Length: 389
Image (tube, one colour):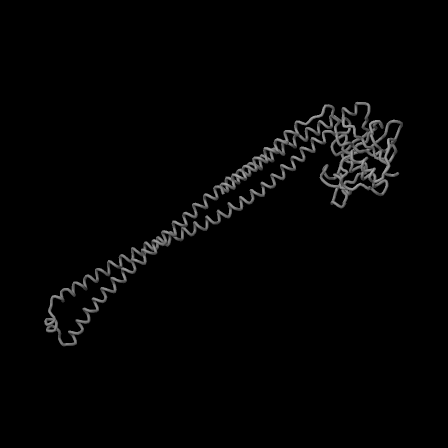
């Protein structure tokens, strides 16, 4: 049990150290010039860390449950042994009482026998001729002789019975004493096991608390990154290249709650909490544009795996979907400049075109997982995908 505890202790400590080190690495990530979407990588990394930490915490919670079950089982066994010990001790006490009573009976028998032996001794001083002479008749003589013989037999029988009773009582007492010691040893062993299980449970619960504390710290850092992301977007708006028209939690017709092959999804759920009809996470830019394509053209050919916007131009080629550099209403605009759109790019739906400016609608740009529309310079767009041909 001690060896098992040491292995669990080492494994849990190692996991916590590795996860904490990774979290610190994520926290130290930074970009010289940051576009708000570039915070997504840091946020994602922290969320992934939280998933790992939560998995560890859940695993430890299961382990803690098994420890608690073992403790409860040991408590049941200890209670059972205690009842057995009490019962055995009661038998020992009863046996002592029986021995005392038997000894008193033996003493009484000895006293009675002593008086009989004394009487026989007095009679034994008389010769056979004297006994015969004192007897009224021959029959009386025979009766006296038979009485003496009976008393002798009774003396032997009583002594044998008393001896056998003593041997039996002593054996029972010894057996019960051995049994009592065995039960007490078993109970002591169970107490030791229960103490070890309690130590392991306490350590595991401490590990769970440490993981939960790290998750809480990560959540605070995520909140801070989201605040920085919003601030970065606001700075971006003032650059002259982008002008946000409107923003809100949900919008653009994106469904609040829809049922797809992966279950319910949509804007009513927190970002990245569900998967849409095309295998993409909800309230992400690609999920919104995929939905707009399906609504506009009745079909969205991409199916899973195309979760990053910078993958879409290459995927369009594999699906024989035309692409170009000319903005068109109803096309999907893909921006991959990391300064503006982050390291994985950004997908937008083209609503209108006015010279070099295009009006786009999108999710996850002005704030995490939120809808917004904005005018943006077409020069910032790398590729337009023409799903409508």
